[in-house]
Length: 501
Image (cartoon, rainbow, N blue to C red; front, side, top):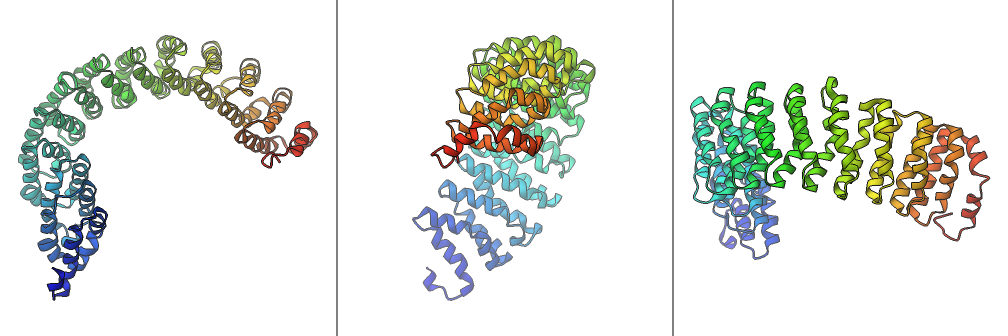
């Protein structure tokens, strides 16, 4: 074909056509990646009249090629002549948004969302709105799922009449017979809620939330209702949140599907931030309790992982009371869990309660739990506690630290798991600053030197770094008197291992 062409200006499109017909997928993909270069060579008019129509007719290829095409078209606004002509990019993107493969559709929707702000209000109504209508009423569920992602990007730019049309079309998608479409609608419901006027939100979108988040027979739809509830809670007045959203949250906490309960546990602090502190204290604490006691380990672990943020975000006037009377009794039970996922998650955040509870409560109630977890048989639990000891150090004095915590730390210094030993080493400079020179020399200097001849290279390497940090902290005189005379350095010097030396 290209041999018959005499007009050199036709070469770019001819070469593209040849390469897109090549049997090798990588050749076709490389050609698509050069679309912007080809469009520049052709100029805006020929890009609009030749290249874009050609691409529209070429939407029959492997997923990777089609996805790349959708990606490239996001940069085409200046290449077709600017916002005035951006509507000419809709036909190929409409085809891609209806493709069978999710990755292609998602990229096409992403590009359409990117292009939407380039449309004038008139062009939105003339070109973009009909596109959404066609996708939303398509025979295949693929196009209807793609439509769900386009409503919010044009809503605020649209006229009152068009807004009403958009709301009606979205309501239809929320009640679609196909679960995949309802799932896509539920996923975008909260996003659209943020765009609506309050009256329209109350009358048109809020009634859609209970059917999706509680009554839908698919848990994949209901769990997305949890996400939407966060968005609704942020934009609705307090009385609406109390009347409509809180009951849905309570229902989600007791949903028959653990996946829905997990989703709520994962977003509980987002909800806490969305509602007013008074509502959070009155209603979300109860919900959080339910999640911490959930029969499913994954849910309890997700809830436990939010403990630090949830407790910190409680209103100051109720924070200590809620932690002491409500959360701490549950935490005591969770420390004795057999589920490793729960114990590990709890160990990573439990110490963050110390600054919130103060010295007296930390010593009496939190420290015993800390010591239990420091002796847990699982190394991940011990590691998580060690990594968060700084929170306790800020509250405890040297006396309590040396009497209560130090024996456990000394024991962990020779732990059979090298990663635990490594974590203890990394904790040493902080501990040195807390204990002071005399106490450190009496209890920990020998440990620091012992790690220099550890069986594991990573531990020995960390031990050297640790000594350097300690020397910066305690001074050269300390190193001269405490380190250099010791037999460990002689042992290292005599070692046959190059890494030891």
